[in-house]
Length: 444
Ligand code: DQQ
Image 1 (cartoon, rainbow, N blue to C red):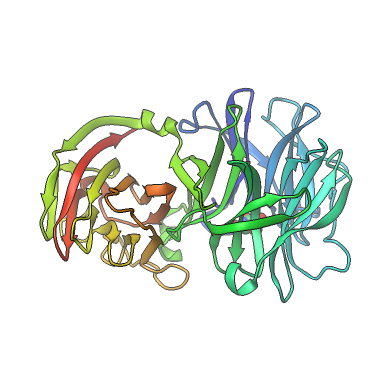
Image 2: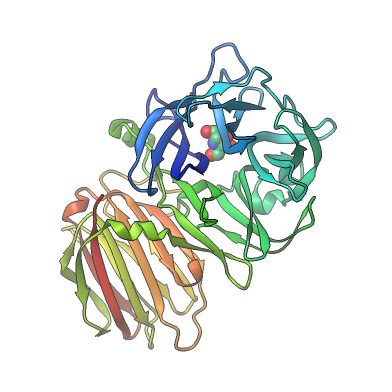
């Protein structure tokens, strides 16, 4: 699987679609798979919602898109390839089965006169006039990625307005994939995935109805393993995000495993005062907690140690540290018998929270290299007296790290026997203080 698509809550149930190749763990023949859940954790698989139709406008794949309800009719808006065209499918049986619209492709070409580097991944929202707006991920040749803004009353006839925002190719990529655009904290946020930078960029600012005037930019995830996230607003008005966590192992290992790609936990979004996006796990995730382990507050001398009581491949860890005079400190996770582990910590000299996979337990070789370096970090300035907070979720090969101000890093590692792995602490260049540590085994 790859991108999440069509995230929507309908009649109380969460529907998530995603890019899926039923032929195997390689990128080809994109279908829309479909799962349904009451709580975003326990899923029931529905039949494929969209299947490429030989000889037609989506013969080479049903690429990413969104779900809306238009005049009471659940509707998917997606990209048929090749060439890239925008298409509709509707459901008459509560989202169980989908029929492609006879008017497809409803948007058969990019705007005339614009030299674009891509034309895919439609994302719809309502304008202030009540009409639909649709953003299509794109790029302007020689300039950079963009999201093209259209208006439509019926999803069938679309009027091109203008690019919502245009990026610089050297910074955010030549083409923007999978735009999401949503109100948050009194402003608007555009989320795009930039190719070939392979990062989920955010832009926050004022939306004047035609263009976004950004005052801040950032990343939706700093871990280097989350791409093509999609944001939706649920029936309670919560702004939620799912992202595709891609693999960090070589193709031959993926083929041997027989599967590739997982979805992140659902994340609740808010805005920091500086306009950057803050992510926290959706509160539903806490229902997965089982046995708990607590460690008393203690001084952390230089060195490293294992917490023998803390073992498992499926854990939530919640720790608070005071840096004191230490230069680097934090948790070691997925510690194997040979001492290999992944370090999740804070570098007080640099003011960065980091995930270090350079000595990660690895079932085979890791596919390190660009765009998959072993080390990822995010700027995080702690105020005087502010504790470092780390909330870490481990799930076999997945690490999701939530820190202060909603900074998040998602990563993948491949310990040989994750359930046999332990957790530990490390501290370098002085002593830090562990203020609290609580851990839970997680289970569905
Ligand atoms: N993946 C889809 C495209 C999108 C890309 C195809 C992003 O629609 O642009 O699976 O990962």
